[in-house]
Every structure is written in structure tokens, then in C-alpha cells.
Length: 295
Ligand code: NDP
Image (tube, rainbow, N blue to C red; front, side):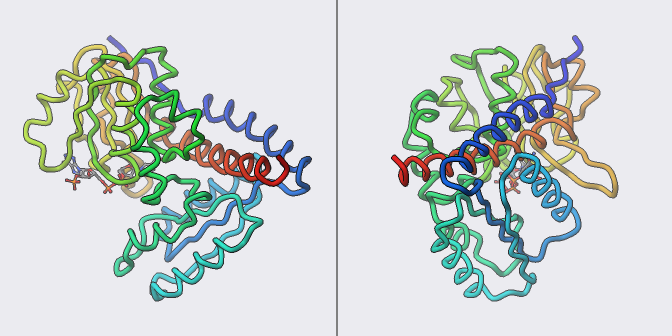
């Protein structure tokens, strides 16, 4: 078997084209485009690259951005004060924080200072609580809850294969607040039977060998190999490991491509679609606010 490449770019371009139209409609209705504020604290060079690609995508989609760049040694009280100011800025439709945060800052406290209604990455406790309170995928979609972007991107790619996840066995590797756990929940809402694995999981290979769907988000290069996979599995690799100029995922690509039916490349798989999902959330938030303001 030779896996089909599940590329993020074509889907991202389709989504961005619809965002462009929706952003234009918002501008027409209220006289200003969707607006996103990005708080970047002490970004290293690789996060600068991601920030630039986000800004470029926003520009192309007609989403206005402001970036607040802070030094890594900024006191936590200053960050919280800035987030409070952003929350009181009624012209903003979305507020987001570049991660990882520098050591010494309490990530949970800072994330939860983002105004939940404009938490376009879907990572505040309030937003995740809304997400986890829903059981069916249709309910989740119609509720307008803001879905964490990377998890949402991986699921869009899965659905693109035409596979119905209902009753399938899925393994998610990685249990972080922003990727692994929301991805496991989304798969559960799609009626898959989900096993959530992490660094303390024993016999990861044996879990993987039974999985029809594998979604990995660890940042450990080569963690998942072709020999671990069930023939025909759909493999979604959200992992990113940067070594010099090379970017690797969690999946050892060559071996996995021989066993999987579909496989996301790294780079070029989940990543490009994650940015489009972020802009989709900004636009959703703007649409919701226009509806509340103009009826
Ligand atoms: P975290 O570091 O928060 O979480 C990593 C998870 O991987 C943890 O749950 C950890 O387990 C688990 N893990 C680590 N080592 C192993 C192992 N040997 N076996 C099984 N599980 C393991 O990372 P994030 O969730 O924030 O990000 C995960 C990856 O996704 C990173 O590579 C990141 O760069 C990438 N990413 C990609 C995005 C995209 O757009 N494609 C966007 C955001 C992130 P434990 O909980 O036990 O520590």
C-alpha cells in the first residue's frame, strides 16, 4: 500500500477563499474588517516564522491584525493588564497568545485572562468547558463554539478522506490542553472509540496496531513507525520538530506511507490548515458580534 498524501494547502486555500468573502461582507455591514490582536511574548526565531506566516494569511484574507510584542522578562502582572485592556477594546473580534510562553509565566492564568468570547484559539477554560459539554459533532458545529485550531484542522483533514469515523478505533498520541485532548474529544463527538496515549502509556505500539485513525501531537520525531500501524490506517501528524532547517513530524514518513491509506506530510499537512482554522474562528467571532450588534 502507498498512502495518499493528505495535504493541508488545498483545503486551507478553499477555506481562506470563503473567509475572504465573509470578511468582505462583515466590512460592508459594519464598516470595519474582522480584527485580531496577537500577543507575542519573547518569541524565538522559529515562532517568529510562524507569526509572519499568520500575519501574511490574515492580510490575504482581509483580517486586520495588531501585534503586541513583549520582552521575555515581562512581569506576569503586565501581561494580565494588557489582556484586560485588549478585552475592553470593543473593536477586536479575536485575541490570541503566541505559545510557548517564556518560563516563569503561569500559562493557565494567562490563557484564562483572554476574553472567552474572543478566544479564537479556543483554549480558555471557559471555551474548553463549552466544547467538552457537547456530545455530538453536529451540535458542536451548530453551537458556534470556537474549536481549538490544530485539533480542528486535523479533523477537517480526516473528514476530507471520506472516512466515517463512527465506530472506528482512534488513537490520539499527546494529551495537551491545546491539541491532544480537544482532538480526542472531537473524535469522540464523531463517534469514534478513542484511546488517548501520552508519555506514560505502556505499549504504545500495541495501541497503534489496532487503530483505524492515528492522530499524533507530541513533537517527538519518528515516534510512530510504519511497523506500528494497522494496514490502511489514516494517519494525521500534527507534530513539529525543528532541527536546523529541517522540520519533522512525529511519524517516520517513509515506513508509514507503506502501511497507511492516508498520511499528512510534515511540513504541508496539518500546519497550513491550522492557520486557516484560526482565521475561520476570527471570522466566526466577528460574524457573531455583527449579529449581536445589528440583529
Ligand atoms: P505538549 O508538549 O504540550 O504535549 C506533548 C504531548 O506529547 C504530551 O501529552 C506528552 O505526554 C506527549 N508525549 C511526549 N513524549 C511522548 C512519547 N514518547 N510517547 C507518547 N507521548 C509523548 O505539546 P503540544 O500539544 O503543544 O504540541 C504537540 C506537537 O504539536 C508539537 O510538536 C507542536 O510543535 C505541534 N503543534 C503543531 C501545530 C500545527 O499547526 N501543526 C500547532 C500546535 C502544536 P505527557 O502529557 O505525559 O507529558
